[in-house]
Image 1: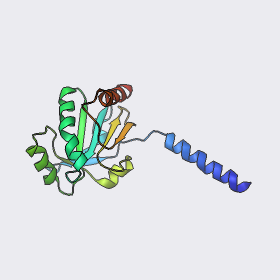
Image 2: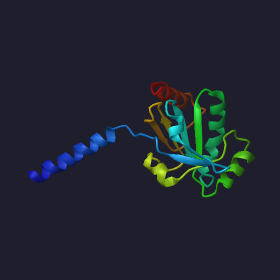
Image 3: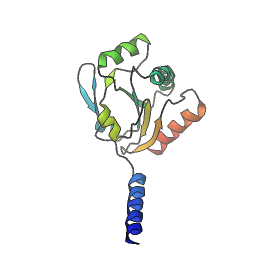
Image 4: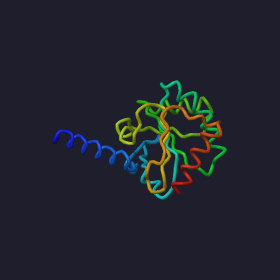
Length: 158
């Protein structure tokens, strides 16, 4: 009986931990000049945080639609971070495709702490730095349902 009680306690603790909000204040990245930025710089403002890489085919396919969505929703703060080894690869791709995102380079170990388990991954982060919604895999930015899901999460986290 003691065995089952301890197992039940572990299960309940796991459920409590998984139901707790994930805070995203400690993530840092660099721009092409090497300047470091952090999610803490955006505290008090909701934003969309997107992780991608040039070696990821779904990421490459998704970025043009995401760029169009970002332009149509210019009031939404969007940070698009490459997990490539070299920021020059991301910069070259973004420029060659005519995408409006600056090249930013992040770290996969830090990204995993935010729940990134594959690419692409998009996080909607509230003004209190909680992760409100996570999309693992490509978002269909042109679909009304996906767009509204992101906008609604941003609105709830304002």
